[in-house]
Length: 238
Image 1 (cartoon, rainbow, N blue to C red):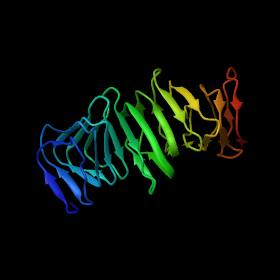
Image 2 (cartoon, rainbow, N blue to C red):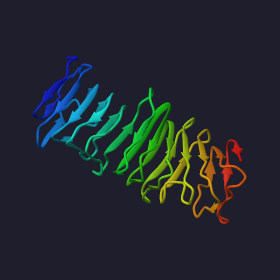
Image 3 (cartoon, rainbow, N blue to C red):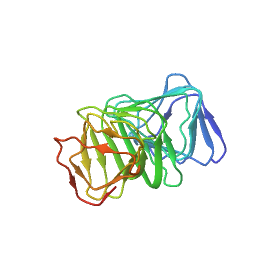
């Protein structure tokens, strides 16, 4: 169905759901996305009611809009390839994952609390709209995550991972520039760009990098922690 479609109830997929190119609008209260298939894909979704995603993979290839709310259940997965302007997106349940995954356009990452957050956008940039908290893992699989000058707060149980070829860019003008509290897992072919202006000292710093670049110019002096030995496995640019 390529026309716009509206639903007032839950959507259950126990087989194969083939959605068209129209916008699917959901208006029910206390409804859900579920089914034994574990997955659904839509071109664009507007939620004007209240829905819970119980699926391991709910993929929206366009925009997620609406005046209602979507709540991620435990271990649910939500992939967004367009903009996300829905009024309420609740992403704090244990084990749930949000993926920003457009490879055709840059995206804005909502400022909120996430459990697990994945950036998977080869050749494109995802930029924070504001400060975010990640209670689980933050992974850059492909493309670039730009912090937009905002803080990323992590937890001791979480890992900040950057795959080969993927990039993290910080334009923060004060410490910390890296996600706080997390374990770092930076591939030897990954890249970190520290482009924030101003001079300041880092209180915490990863001990091993792939490629590392300081791009703010000579007037911006960055001081590394004296107690942190650092290994650069790729290129260092200052």
